[in-house]
Image 1 (cartoon, rainbow, N blue to C red):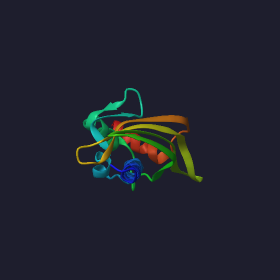
Image 2 (image 1 turned 180 degrees about the vertical axis):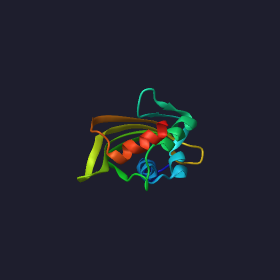
Image 3 (image 1 turned 90 degrees about the vertical axis):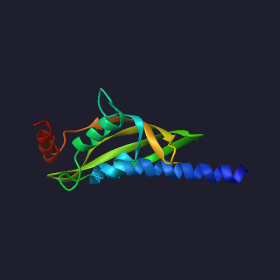
Length: 154
Protein backbone atom coordinates (compact mmCIF):
# COMPACT_ATOMS: atom_id res chain seq x y z
CA UNK A 1 0.00 0.00 0.00
CA UNK A 2 1.11 3.54 -0.65
CA UNK A 3 1.44 6.02 2.18
CA UNK A 4 -1.78 7.70 1.04
CA UNK A 5 -3.68 4.40 0.99
CA UNK A 6 -2.43 3.59 4.49
CA UNK A 7 -3.55 6.99 5.76
CA UNK A 8 -6.97 6.65 4.13
CA UNK A 9 -7.39 3.13 5.57
CA UNK A 10 -6.54 4.42 9.05
CA UNK A 11 -9.13 7.20 8.74
CA UNK A 12 -11.75 4.73 7.52
CA UNK A 13 -10.93 2.36 10.38
CA UNK A 14 -11.25 5.16 12.95
CA UNK A 15 -14.55 6.29 11.41
CA UNK A 16 -15.91 2.74 11.51
CA UNK A 17 -14.79 2.28 15.12
CA UNK A 18 -16.60 5.51 16.01
CA UNK A 19 -19.71 4.07 14.32
CA UNK A 20 -19.55 1.15 16.76
CA UNK A 21 -18.88 3.39 19.76
CA UNK A 22 -21.78 5.71 18.94
CA UNK A 23 -24.09 2.85 17.96
CA UNK A 24 -23.70 1.37 21.46
CA UNK A 25 -25.25 4.42 23.16
CA UNK A 26 -27.96 4.95 20.57
CA UNK A 27 -29.00 1.29 20.72
CA UNK A 28 -29.27 1.43 24.52
CA UNK A 29 -31.18 4.69 24.53
CA UNK A 30 -33.72 3.63 21.89
CA UNK A 31 -33.83 -0.14 22.31
CA UNK A 32 -32.42 -1.18 18.94
CA UNK A 33 -31.58 -4.82 19.60
CA UNK A 34 -30.20 -5.43 16.10
CA UNK A 35 -27.89 -2.41 16.29
CA UNK A 36 -26.70 -3.48 19.76
CA UNK A 37 -26.01 -7.05 18.61
CA UNK A 38 -24.01 -5.76 15.65
CA UNK A 39 -21.65 -3.89 17.99
CA UNK A 40 -20.19 -7.07 19.54
CA UNK A 41 -17.80 -9.82 18.53
CA UNK A 42 -19.25 -13.27 19.39
CA UNK A 43 -16.75 -13.78 22.24
CA UNK A 44 -16.90 -10.20 23.55
CA UNK A 45 -16.81 -9.20 27.21
CA UNK A 46 -18.81 -6.31 28.71
CA UNK A 47 -17.75 -4.98 32.10
CA UNK A 48 -20.70 -3.12 33.62
CA UNK A 49 -20.70 -5.03 36.88
CA UNK A 50 -18.87 -7.93 38.49
CA UNK A 51 -18.93 -10.53 37.15
CA UNK A 52 -18.75 -9.21 33.58
CA UNK A 53 -21.07 -10.32 30.78
CA UNK A 54 -19.30 -12.81 28.51
CA UNK A 55 -20.35 -13.79 25.02
CA UNK A 56 -23.29 -12.87 22.83
CA UNK A 57 -25.98 -14.52 24.97
CA UNK A 58 -25.04 -12.71 28.21
CA UNK A 59 -24.45 -9.39 26.45
CA UNK A 60 -27.87 -9.58 24.79
CA UNK A 61 -29.45 -10.43 28.16
CA UNK A 62 -27.80 -7.31 29.62
CA UNK A 63 -29.28 -5.24 26.79
CA UNK A 64 -32.77 -6.64 27.36
CA UNK A 65 -32.55 -5.90 31.10
CA UNK A 66 -31.52 -2.28 30.44
CA UNK A 67 -33.96 0.63 30.17
CA UNK A 68 -34.89 1.99 26.73
CA UNK A 69 -37.20 4.63 25.28
CA UNK A 70 -40.13 5.07 25.38
CA UNK A 71 -40.48 3.41 28.81
CA UNK A 72 -37.51 5.36 30.19
CA UNK A 73 -35.77 8.19 28.38
CA UNK A 74 -32.03 8.72 28.87
CA UNK A 75 -29.09 9.70 26.71
CA UNK A 76 -25.59 8.26 26.64
CA UNK A 77 -23.06 10.98 25.76
CA UNK A 78 -19.51 10.25 24.71
CA UNK A 79 -16.65 12.71 24.25
CA UNK A 80 -12.93 12.73 23.52
CA UNK A 81 -12.61 9.28 21.94
CA UNK A 82 -8.95 8.40 21.39
CA UNK A 83 -8.50 5.49 19.01
CA UNK A 84 -5.40 3.46 18.23
CA UNK A 85 -5.52 0.98 15.32
CA UNK A 86 -3.01 -1.83 14.84
CA UNK A 87 -3.88 -4.07 11.90
CA UNK A 88 -7.16 -5.86 12.66
CA UNK A 89 -7.29 -4.85 16.32
CA UNK A 90 -7.76 -1.49 17.97
CA UNK A 91 -8.19 0.14 21.34
CA UNK A 92 -9.97 3.28 22.43
CA UNK A 93 -10.68 5.25 25.54
CA UNK A 94 -13.35 7.91 25.88
CA UNK A 95 -15.31 9.82 28.48
CA UNK A 96 -19.03 9.27 29.00
CA UNK A 97 -22.01 10.68 30.85
CA UNK A 98 -25.59 9.46 31.03
CA UNK A 99 -28.33 12.07 31.19
CA UNK A 100 -31.62 10.98 32.81
CA UNK A 101 -34.97 12.61 33.53
CA UNK A 102 -35.45 13.57 37.18
CA UNK A 103 -38.42 15.49 38.67
CA UNK A 104 -36.28 18.64 38.53
CA UNK A 105 -35.46 18.01 34.86
CA UNK A 106 -32.54 16.42 33.03
CA UNK A 107 -29.55 15.58 35.20
CA UNK A 108 -26.44 13.44 35.01
CA UNK A 109 -26.93 9.95 36.43
CA UNK A 110 -23.29 8.90 36.07
CA UNK A 111 -20.04 9.72 34.36
CA UNK A 112 -16.72 8.03 33.81
CA UNK A 113 -14.71 6.51 31.00
CA UNK A 114 -14.87 3.59 28.62
CA UNK A 115 -11.84 1.42 27.90
CA UNK A 116 -12.44 -0.50 24.69
CA UNK A 117 -10.79 -3.21 22.61
CA UNK A 118 -11.97 -3.88 19.06
CA UNK A 119 -11.52 -6.50 16.41
CA UNK A 120 -12.15 -6.24 12.68
CA UNK A 121 -14.64 -9.02 11.87
CA UNK A 122 -14.56 -11.14 8.72
CA UNK A 123 -17.20 -8.84 7.17
CA UNK A 124 -14.87 -5.85 7.70
CA UNK A 125 -16.99 -4.40 10.53
CA UNK A 126 -15.23 -3.25 13.71
CA UNK A 127 -16.83 -4.73 16.84
CA UNK A 128 -16.17 -4.59 20.54
CA UNK A 129 -14.02 -7.40 21.81
CA UNK A 130 -14.15 -5.86 25.28
CA UNK A 131 -15.75 -2.80 26.85
CA UNK A 132 -14.97 -1.67 30.37
CA UNK A 133 -17.26 1.01 31.81
CA UNK A 134 -15.36 2.72 34.62
CA UNK A 135 -18.02 4.65 36.51
CA UNK A 136 -16.25 7.43 38.38
CA UNK A 137 -19.32 9.07 39.89
CA UNK A 138 -22.98 8.07 40.08
CA UNK A 139 -26.13 9.04 41.88
CA UNK A 140 -29.39 7.24 42.63
CA UNK A 141 -31.35 6.51 39.45
CA UNK A 142 -34.62 8.37 38.85
CA UNK A 143 -37.91 6.75 39.91
CA UNK A 144 -38.75 5.56 36.36
CA UNK A 145 -35.51 3.55 36.23
CA UNK A 146 -36.16 2.07 39.68
CA UNK A 147 -39.67 1.01 38.66
CA UNK A 148 -38.33 -0.62 35.51
CA UNK A 149 -35.65 -2.47 37.46
CA UNK A 150 -38.25 -3.74 39.93
CA UNK A 151 -40.25 -5.25 37.06
CA UNK A 152 -37.11 -7.03 35.82
CA UNK A 153 -36.57 -8.76 39.17
CA UNK A 154 -40.14 -9.96 39.59
